[in-house]
Length: 265
Image (cartoon, rainbow, N blue to C red):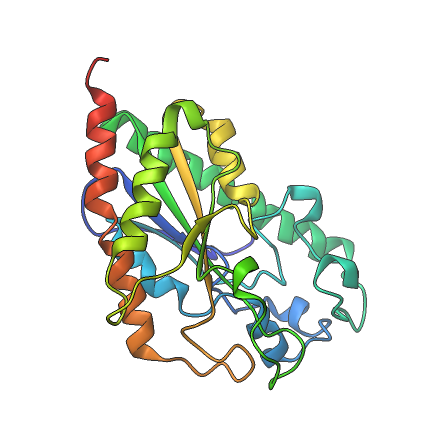
């Protein structure tokens, strides 16, 4: 039996959920002993500190395991990285994973989706509709530690992935979210927030939209790593807090749009 590696934590009531499915860093011992990557290399491609931003929602999805054990944001057949092409060209394995390792990792994958569906169904019953903030982060100095940032025109500070959402149903809510996040204070400035520039939303939000086509809206939020040094892993706590506050400022507008959808047209 694979022990639990994720948690649904409810600290309040309401139809908003926030997840940090790539924040985790842990590995099962049998995975760790075969993996070729250093801890630093793994952490650079994970999404550290994103779990702190899930506090903006009353319901939080927290994952402790690394995406290098099982990637919950990819289709099941691609959820375990096997070759460098699966993971940014990185040499992944000293020895290939055994059949049992693969089986246990996919069991984790299935348990996660089954458990999340059960809890989202409960939100659906209680509130009619819900919104999921699927929170991630991304690198923008990939070449080497001293590399200059990648072109800001193609790398917004916040990329909102919404490609799989039903625009006719959720378009107004998505536009409100983008506008509110872009208008929020960020250390005396404004965040550059754009939709579907670099990322369009992974398997998790696509699954939400397939499974809850009329009642669930998932926003894939990719924050550029302007809040940390992506190579050293050193964070800037004041920026992390400023992003949390900006993200929290979007929740009232999302709730207002959900309320509007309840009214007859």
